[in-house]
Amino acid sequence: MTRTGTAPGSPAPAGARADRPAALPAGPRGGARFRHALHAEWIKVRTMRSTRYVVLGTLLLGTGLASLNGASSGDEYASLPPQDRSAFDPLALSLRGYILAQVTLALLGGLVVTAEYGSRTIIGTLSAIPHRRRVLAAKAVALTAIALPTGLATTLSGFAAGQAALKGAGAPHTALADEGAARAILGGALYLALAALLGLAVGTLIRSTTATVTTLFTALLIVPAFGPALPGRLADWTARYWPPSAGGQIVTGYRDPALLDPWPGFAVMAGCVTIVLAAAFLVFRRRDA
Amino acid sequence: MIEVRGLTKRYGEVLAVDELSFTVRAGEVTGFLGPNGAGKSTTMRMILGLDAPTSGTATVGGLPARAQPAPLRAVGALLDAGAVLPGRSAHHHLLALAAGNGIPRGRVAAVLEEVGLTRVARRAAGTYSLGMKQRLGIAAALLGDPPVLVLDEPLNGLDPEGIVWIRGLMRRMAAEGRAVMVSSHLMSEVELTVDHLVVIGRGRLIADTGMAEFVAAHSRREVAVRSPQAAGLGPLLTAAGARVRPSGADGLTVTGIGAAEIGAVAAANGVELHELTPRQTSLEEAFMELTQHSVEYAAERGETR
Ligand SMILES: Nc1ncnc2c1ncn2[C@@H]1O[C@H](COP(=O)(O)OP(=O)(O)O)[C@@H](O)[C@H]1O
Ligand SMILES: [Mg+2]
Image 1 (cartoon, each protein chain N blue to C red):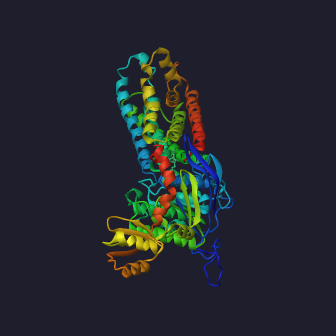
Image 2 (image 1 turned 90 degrees about the horizontal axis):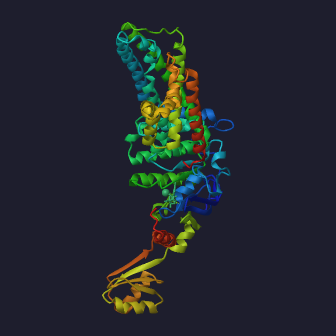
Image 3 (image 1 turned 45 degrees about the vertical axis):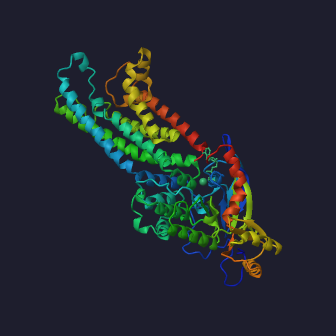
């Protein structure tokens, strides 16, 4: 019980740890920083099974939907009345896959944090890095590093597949150099990254995977789809200002005067994601693990 | 060294930890005991900065958790052994933790080796047994080679081999000069391993004492005696200076004098003995007596955890 004796040959007194085997080299000067947290989150998001499925699924859905959309709408083009032909939007048709891609990427964003609560690994994460803002910021950056390239690959391949299908059907189509194409492809990719960040923010606020999935489905799919069924003014408002609906204008070529223009619409979505993400930071900082 | 001063945590109506103060010293294994719901896990979570105290402080090496430059190098913890993402391998689980604290990746292989998981390190952690997950949890605690270890009920649900391993590990860590804090709701789990005891009930400190002092104060020697003439033997032993309690039809529990003296009294009086067994009352009983009040209080209030 008394282990403070220092008789010759006795084990090192309490506190002296010099002769322990395999001593760890000194750590980074000034302690662990944001880049260490980012490295940790990057390893985690890369080694989450869902990441692979989401990246592949997003690409397949985005490209597949563009091809199908292009082929079927292209076939219909010939039979359209002239007034509808003026609203025919080859750009939006080829990028319509964003509707599903935003959901898969938002789910990935949600999982980045809800999987930690579900599996309780949040305990280890926050014991290693007790700075909550650092952890959430690192998650956001690591997630964006996956979501943005995936989004860009999705809009690019969707554009290529969709335009090829339209061309094949003999309908109007757009080239990469045409007006609006670059904006829709790059803006669409940014929109998809925003959807992922929205998922992260919602997941952080809600913590439960199932409730997060339900919330994201509602916000991204159900409200935009059933908005027109709402009473008059509300239906118009939803179509124009509901953030995912407004943000979706970024992939369109045809200008509907009842809806926002591409960049203003995108700004509404970006503003909404910023607010929800700010709320997530506030809540995450104060909450017990 | 862990220093807890006036630590208090309130969850709404529940006062989970109430003005708790104690110290966990380097070179010792400190047992942190209390019945279920006493506030052990909550206290440990506050030490690690996972839960914010309502009031009071908890520091490791003089710093609160959020002020640690690299927390894993200051304190290693096993709070929830099942906490792994099922699809992620032990290797990647540890690699991410190490990266977050700027711990070189070579250390991951070293701790995996130390806990005996090298062979399965690349397998999805969801396929691990409870014992293997526990070892992974210990590996995570050892990653930063920390001078302080905090283990919450590390023996829960382990097979005997795992229990022996963790006990040995705790002794080894203390012998290397580290401070080890281990919680349990069973005295028997830790009585052979710990140097110091901190006992809490209902969030309050009940005892803060060396294990040796606790044993000296609480373990009573007694002798179980059985005899067909028990009724007659009782008064004879009392006359010889013993305290005697009847136990069953033909049994006596004797304290105050030893088995040899009891045997001598019986022989001198021609009393036939069927049993003469020296016993030590268990520390578990002493522990339960100590915490009984807090448990009863909880039961009265209809609380279950
Ligand atoms: N997050 C929480 N919210 C509300 N009450 C809690 C929470 N965590 C613990 N408690 C309560 O605090 C008390 C102490 O719990 P705990 O620290 O888990 O005890 P122990 O680990 O000693 O079994 C219990 O009454 C428990 O119900
Ligand atoms: Mg507990």
